[in-house]
Length: 128
Image 1 (cartoon, helix red, strand yellow):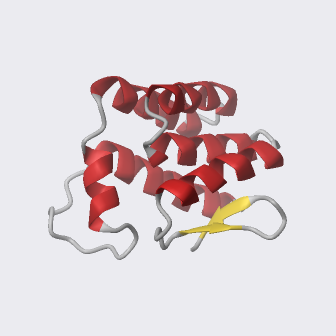
Image 2 (tube, rainbow, N blue to C red; image 1 turned 180 degrees about the vertical axis):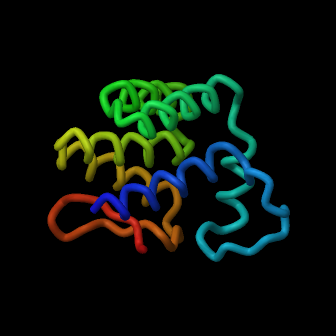
């Protein structure tokens, strides 16, 4: 489970924060180009909330991460990065229904995302 969370967090960090030094043309096969462009074009306040959520998540402060991701979803409900982070934080806090609800929103906003899968046990997980 920890590996799944780490992989999902890495996807969120990359999607929300840019390419972290990777060449712009490097194919990952994980997110389509429209979703990648959308993540790179986040408004500054949304990006700041997601960055803060990512930092809190990496520090295992899932309650603080939840608050920051929730703020991002309030500022930009049409952006999936905040919903994805919220799903991951809610899952770590043991709130399976809230995690599943947030992941449903991710799927609605990005129906073709290839690394994200809703679990049959109402939890969400990323493909390894």
